[in-house]
Image 1 (cartoon, rainbow, N blue to C red):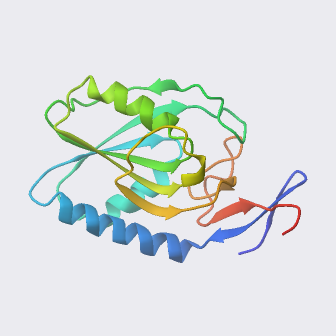
Image 2 (image 1 turned 180 degrees about the vertical axis):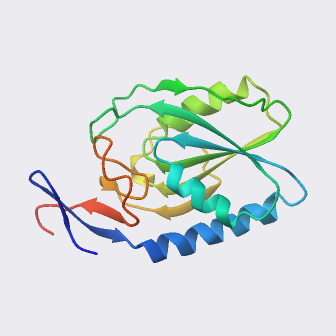
Length: 182
């Protein structure tokens, strides 16, 4: 893994593809155990969660359904705007169903809080959250994250679905913005 230069900013390797894939496989096994005998709906949050959710479902070897929502709180910036906009709503009926929200990263918790409030109105049987990355020191909202791939520091990351101005989502590993003293 080599450094990536974007304008004047350098991104350095953070999580390798192998490390990510091993953890995704573990998360799928946990979910299969917890949802044994059930058919949950995996709800991916676009655009960021598409790679994580795709890999997670490859290892989830039990019946399930899939849907997507699209939210935006970043635009093309590196920090959240503090406001969530829904760009694509649910297409399935979640009433009385087990729902697994799949996120790429939980930063402040704003998007998860927004989703929980929105989805509760649809009366699911249960609702759990799985995220590839959690920045515990950045949380500003009291949200429960049920399955966590990796806890990471409050730094800007790209790759494996995570973007910088809608680019670099296609990287198979995750990179972190290099600090001046690194």
